Image 1 (tube, rainbow, N blue to C red):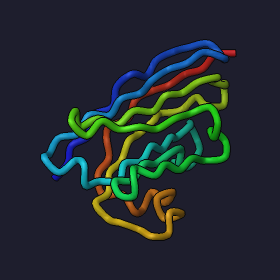
Image 2: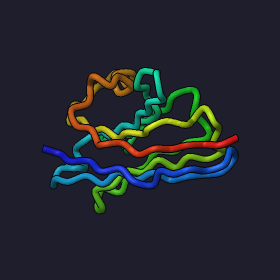
Image 3: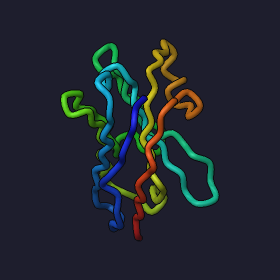
Image 4: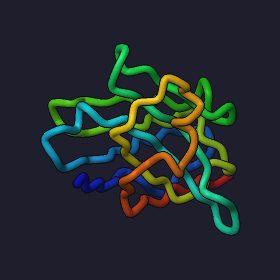
Length: 129
């Protein structure tokens, strides 16, 4: 079992930055791929970013955040981060972190929310224009 707790959300102005954290329980955190997803009101939950645990922690991003967001992890602290720069109003959503112990050679599968087994409760990010 893995429990995930997100933090760091808030209300910010467009163009500024925010860093989300996701603290995980469990001694095998380093063996989980971690994903960030977001859900805006009335919309489906969508992939934002992911970081794997093999091959030097490969990272993947949605096109909408590429170049602005950075996902990273500190295994010694059981924590994964999402650094969000140049925030836009369209980034407003509840942000969730998720974990999966599965390894996929096809990295596209890490963008699929169905592939994740554990989810946090989410943290609200609101970007004002």
